[in-house]
Length: 166
Image (tube, rainbow, N blue to C red):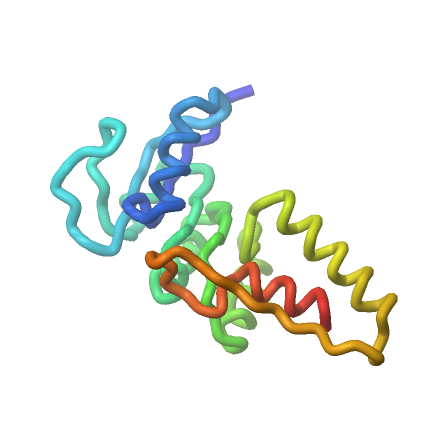
């Protein structure tokens, strides 16, 4: 099986940095492109980060996006034109933006989740079961606490759990 040529957008963020580290040790991936929404002058894992554009993504098989909504849509426009697969870990989309992502998913393969953790996805499933079992006799709420670097609020995880409750 050939390696997947991988692009990571948002490479300087917390998740982006973790993805860079993980992709270096996973033999199924070849990290080929890193992008960021600002100029980065140093190389990361031997790759100079660039901006989101067609040239950056033309030789990749998969784009992983952990950025902010406006960057995600830059990526989706380019990926749609180039017929590239996209994984979206970005959160904080409006309902209108969620609808737009669904439209893009009719043109290209997209995997989108507010949290990629197996444990959180299992928790969401269990939340759905508990909510259905308790019925309308109980009021359920989601409270969250984060580290000081958290950008979006409510988080994708909180939104997922709220959707599971509803």
